[in-house]
Length: 480
Image (cartoon, rainbow, N blue to C red):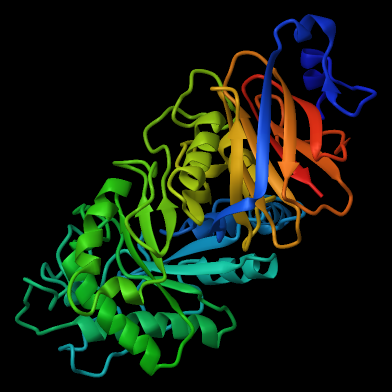
C-alpha cells in the first residue's frame, strides 16, 4: 500500500476486523449493504485478455528496444496469475498478406494456386508476425485459450481480389467470382494455420474467420451478413470434423454488440442452422456496447474494444470520466459480465509501442507504462479464473456497483466499484458458499494504487464482514 494512500484516507484496521478511516474522512462516509448469493449461478467464465495482432507481438518481443529482462517482466504482467493479471485469452490474427511489411500479417498462402480446386502452396516461417513465439511464452505462463481469428481471407479468395477494402468471400450467398467458389479452400486454409501451430507445440482452442464484417476497412477485412457467415460455418464445421480436430468455432466479431445481434437471425435460420455448429458468438464494443445478452444459447465473448480516440491517459483511474480512464473500463468489464452475460472480455491490444489508449500497456523504448485500464481488467482476470461462475450480487447503493464470481477452488471474488465522491462503510454478506479459512483479502485500484493488497478481514459466522470502499475506486474482495 502506498504511503500517499495512507495519508489520504488515514486507513487503519479496526479491532473488529473492519476497515476504518480517520475521523475527518469518516464524516463523508455513506453506508451500504452488499449481498452475494453463491447459490444463484449464471454464466461460466472463460477469462479476459487482449490481442497482439498486426505485429504488436513484436513490440513485446523487443522490436523497439525493450530489453530481455523487461520483456520477461511484461509477459509476466500480462499472463502470469501470481505476478500479473493472468490474462487467459490471447487473440492471434491469422494473416492474409503476401508480405510482412509495415503492420501486415503474413499469410501462410501468400499467392493464389490458380483456382480453389488447385493444390495450395502453404508456407510456415515459425514466427507468424511475432505471434507464434508470443503464444509460446503466454502458454508457458498459464494462458488457457488461444483464439485464432482471421480478419480476411487472402485477396484471391474474395470478390474484390484484395485483402483490404471489404469484399466478400467468393461463393457465399449472393457473391460469385469468375475463379470459382473458395469457401472450402478458405476452410482448409484456416485449418492449416491451426495445424502449423499445433505441429510446433502450441494448441489453438478457438477459430474465427471474420472481423467487423459490417465495415469495409482500408486494412484487412471482409464483409458478411449472417446468412453468408452461416454458409461458411457449415463448411468449416464439416472440415474440422473431417480432420478430427478439437477446435471451437467463433463468429462473427461484429463491430458493435447491436451489429452482432443483427447477424443472429441469419445464423439461426434454415433447417440446418449454423448456430448449432458455433461454440462462441463474438462481438466488439465500438459502435454499440455489450449491455444486454445476445439472442443465442451459445457462450458470448466481447473480443475487441478500446479507446481509439481519447487523450493519452495511462495513469488515471478517475478524473473526468474520460474514455481511457480506469474507472470507465472497470465499469465496461463489469457491465459486460453482469448485464450482457459474456464469458470473455478482450481489450484490443495488450501492450504496444505507443502513447495512445489503444493498448493496456504502453512501451516507451525500454520502459513499461501500465495504464489504470490494465489494472482494472487485472482485478477481474486475476481473481475470477477460467471455469468460475458468476453469481448473484446486489448493492443497496446507486453508485456502488458489484459483481461476484465463484471459482472452481471455492474462492469467491467480489468486485465493488465505488463511483461516488464519498467513501462507503459497507456490510458485505456472502451466502451459499463454503470457505476454508473464512478470510477476505481486499485489493484496490484507484488513482494511487495498482491492485494493492490490503489487510485481510475475517468473516463472521453468518458470512458477513464490515469494510470500507474508498471514493472513486475498484476493490476486489477475495474470500478464501
